[in-house]
Length: 291
Image (tube, rainbow, N blue to C red; front, side):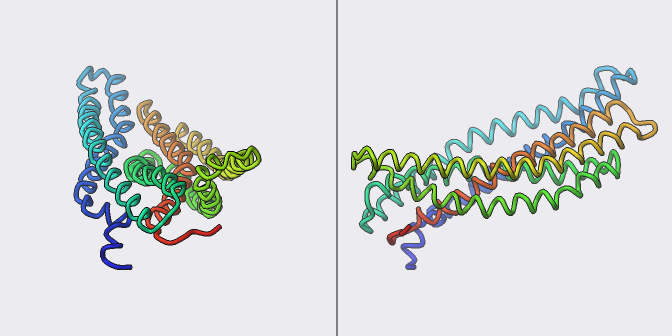
């Protein structure tokens, strides 16, 4: 691949923006740290209010809330402008390059939409993945602060749940390839106008989507069964600890629920990552795809 061709690929176009992307991800990191501290700050506030310390008990929570609000708002304003600019560069570069390579209009049109999805991955899915990772690591660490057995219970489930989602990821990638192959034929099927071909095309799209959804549902159900057992164990050990305060119980269970929410979101993130890998290959391609 020549240097000119490399610079026109998806990551070649994105590369000049890497410093600006790193800025938005750095701000997002602080935003997530503030969110992670919410249950801790609320727990302290509850304990302080019950102890009669008054409104001063809310000061830490108010400070964290304000800092998170400022960082989240600033990042959203910055992100919208940055990733709109990146999509403009990626889509125009891809269309011109693949038009010069003699690609069919139907394929280029489909890949233009896919390019939007690839940029959206960097704008939305990567932050979601980082948030999930911070939630898992930070949430488990904070649980150890409140109860060692509770932290250990949530830590132990990460391995089997991770293996389940890893297997789902392989299945998702294979199904995503077939779904995207069909998307690239959509314009051709519509232009053909044949009742049989149009019906066959959209029936195939429905079939691949159903198979993707079924695979996701099965992976989620198996993982959630394991998670349920861990949550019950945490609830039992935390509430039975001698001298436990109401605010500490709230904070511990809030961390458990944030961990559960992150794990529940994992199948969708795995599917989105599979789509990015396949879309990147198609957006960068200059030779005919078969299959």
